[in-house]
Picture 1 (cartoon, helix red, strand yellow):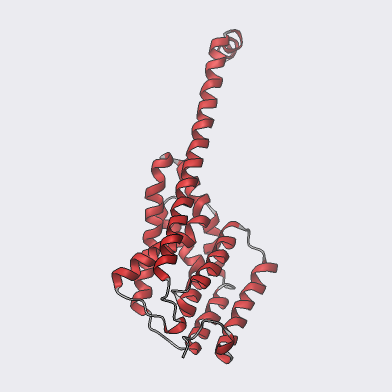
Picture 2 (cartoon, rainbow, N blue to C red):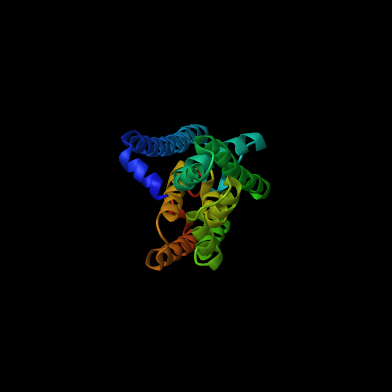
Length: 242
């Protein structure tokens, strides 16, 4: 080993070759990071455009209808890509660095969105146009879920390295399901609520958990649910215009 170090010191060509290999590896890693981030955020941006166009005019508050199964699932996946992929970008990059480079990104994202597609199937099967009381109960339940150890467990897993997109999707679904049910309860076709929930999901994925922030937020969601039940007319867009 000493002789090889001596050779590297005495042979400038050998030393420069090692440095070039290191520089090439660093450049390749940086390129993979940039490409993976661009692909992830670019897809999210495109899906925002698609979702906004498709949802235009469909928001009827708690009386919103989902349309046909094929239409809803296609729109739901676009919505999930728009809302979830920005927060999933760190995990996508970790997966690209762990193995496969940029080629691993489409498979990871596809598996991740497959989980949310399954959630969409469940939503379509269970959803019915409903009243403000039902919406308020769901929102209260979502706020209480934010305080549970199960929620905190899944939230931690979302911030850790996940081997596959499907496994990561399960963790993120477990972490964000309360907020997503809030969207469904208020109006699954509301661009405004979609934006609000997306901001909340992004913050929870990127920021560390802090009780001083998380607990008041959860209680605020519970309080909002109570408001929906006792004074639904005070929530804009909750019920369709007469």
